[in-house]
Amino acid sequence: AEDGIRDVAVTGVQTCALPISANCGIASFTLVNSKIAAGDYVLVQHDSNGTLGAYSCQATGAAGSATVYLTNMTQLALAEAIWLKFTVIKGVLA
Image 1 (spheres, rainbow, N blue to C red):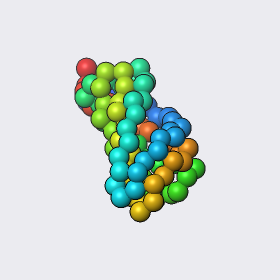
Image 2 (image 1 turned 180 degrees about the vertical axis):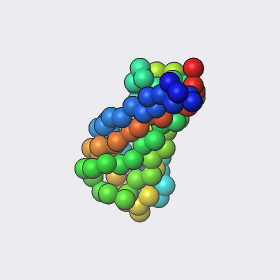
Image 3 (image 1 turned 60 degrees about the vertical axis):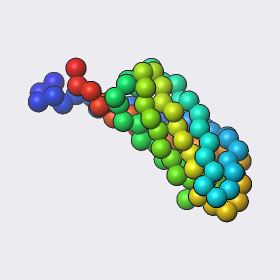
Image 4 (image 1 turned 45 degrees about the vertical axis):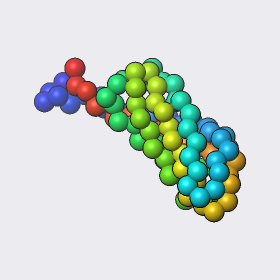
């Protein structure tokens, strides 16, 4: 690749159905994907299903997986089967 540019993204959708308590309650799960490497950036967003705008999403990548953290931003407990869209941005150039 020229100037260190190469395929830099892997994308997908994951369904998640975790109960999350109200008032910034947090739930987490492991997203297994062989394309994720240690040092990669994993971006996650609530894509559809469930209450849009109710969730804050973050992820931490590791070799072969990412831990996804969902924060309930509402005053109500949620237990919805939401769809999460994720993108892996390769963080380490070989």
